[in-house]
Length: 278
Image (cartoon, rainbow, N blue to C red; front, side):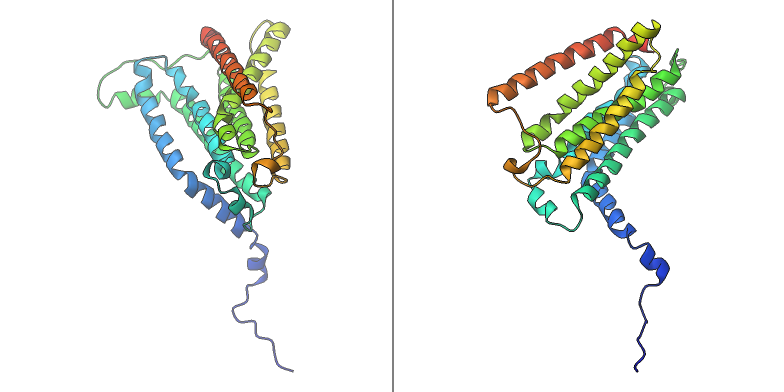
């Protein structure tokens, strides 16, 4: 009986870890597809850290994570819809769930990184250190009365905005819905934050994040989970999506106008109560 050759065959350890190859390939492909966005925003973040404190309160640097989240949610979640290649993408070897998870890891991880380094820049007074390269500022670090509440919300609010925009763009039936998902994401995240803070004020007569933070995290987790469940059943084409839009064009426009108005009102409230949140 002829002996079976085993030359060149992968060993047990190598076979055991072969499952990481498609995961690494998907993560690399998402980084490659969105590297320009990530690099450009990194430069914009550095410019904001350097220049923003010259004109406004340095605490506004903390909004960098939220700004990136509103862009990254639709960009990562709706990549196939925006580029018109859903049918091609769904015909590939990776499953919908694997694509969804890879985009969530890269996009959501970048949101947390930008939010986290903004906190570190504020705490380390990075803007003053950079400005000392060209002039003597003598400015003191920004004073924060409740850093625990502020810094946790700085991480939670952008991630919630990303989760809402990401899930909505992933389920979007068209580019229009994917492109406008940032508006609904911003409205949802700020409405949740406003509602949580209002409940805290009713319960404790102060803002402490004890309701707002768990509420944001819970809604983020539920949104991503539900979005992933529906995305696994999504098929290419406007008639095969699990997300249905209002039946009329004017109904959709009216919804966008109302969302924009609500967003303006919420932003106005947060700007007016800026010192209370600090």
